[in-house]
Image 1: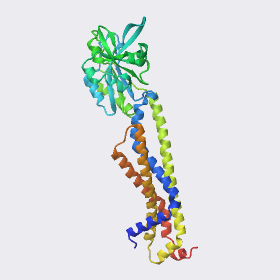
Image 2 (image 1 turned 45 degrees about the horizontal axis):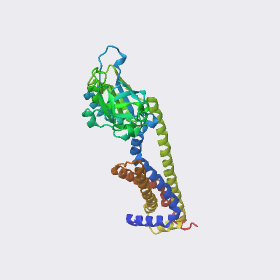
Image 3 (image 1 turned 90 degrees about the horizontal axis):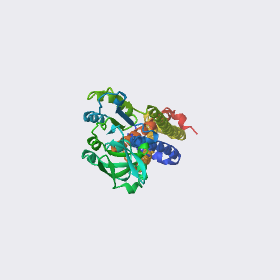
Length: 397
C-alpha cells in the first residue's frame, strides 16, 4: 500500500510535468472561480450601490406614507407622532426615514421687476438622503439645525438660477412671512423633479411659525435598503402605525410596477451571469476528465507495471484521483487570486469594500468547490485505471 504522502507527491509532480496540456483547463476553472468570488463577494456592495441610485429607475426603494385626511372635509388634522416615526425607522430593512409636511406654502416676491412664485416645502434633515439629493453649492441644513429651529432655507437649483445664480443666492436672505431666512445651500438631484423650483425650510421652524396648524409631519419618505425589503416594509407599516395612532386616513404608496420590472430584469441578468460561470466550470470539469482519460491511456503500461509489482487497485485509483484534485486545486488558487484582484478593483470604483470575512468565506467555498469538481471529474478515469488487467496493460502499445 502506497502511503498517502507519496501519492500526493507523485500527483503534484505528474501535474507539473503535464503543465502545458493542463494550462487550458487551469485557466477555464480559474476564470470561473474568479468570477464566482467577485460576484458573490461584491454582490451585496453592488446591490447596495444600485439601490442607492435607483432614482434612475424610478426610485422604487422609496415608500411614501401619508395621512389623507384632506379627502374627508371637517376632520381634525392629524400627523405622525414621534413614536410612530421611531417605530418605522427601526423596522428591519429601513435605511432612512424623513418626515415632511404635505402642505405647500406659497410666497410671492418681486425679482427684477417680475413676480416670482416661491413654493415652500417644510422638511427634516433626513429628507436629503431619503430622496438622494445633493448640494450643488453651500450646505443643506442638518439635524442640529432642525432641532434648533433655525431660520435658514435651501433653494432648488432652478429657483436659485432664476434668482440670480447658484453662487449669488448663498448668504442672502429670503422674506418668508414676518421673518428673514438665510439661504445656506442649493440642492439638486434626479429625484427632485419639479421641486427644483422650491424653497426648503426646516419642518420645526415652519411648525412654530404657522398658527393655523397647517404645517405638520403628515408625510413620511421611507427609503429601504434594497428592493427586497420594500414589500416587507410596506406590508408592516399599517400594523405598526396602528399600535401608536389611528390609521383611518393612512395611505402607503409604492411603485409596484417599476419594482416588479426591475426585479425581473436583475433576475435575468443574475441568471445569465451564473449560467455563464457554471458553464465555464463545467467545461473545466470536462477538461479535467478528458485530460485524466488521456493521462490514463498514455500511462497504461506504467499502470500495468505498478499492478504487477503489487500496487493495489485502491492505490492506482487514489493516485489518479489525487492528480485530478491537485489539478483543480491549483486552478482554484489561480481563480482565487484573480477573484481577489477583481474584488479590489471593483471596490475601488464603487467606493465600498465588502467585509473581509465575506471575501474569505467565499474564497474557501470556491476552493472546496473546485476540489470537489476535480474529484467528480477524476472519478471515472481513476476507476478505469484501477480496473485495468495488469497483463493486458503491460502488453499495451
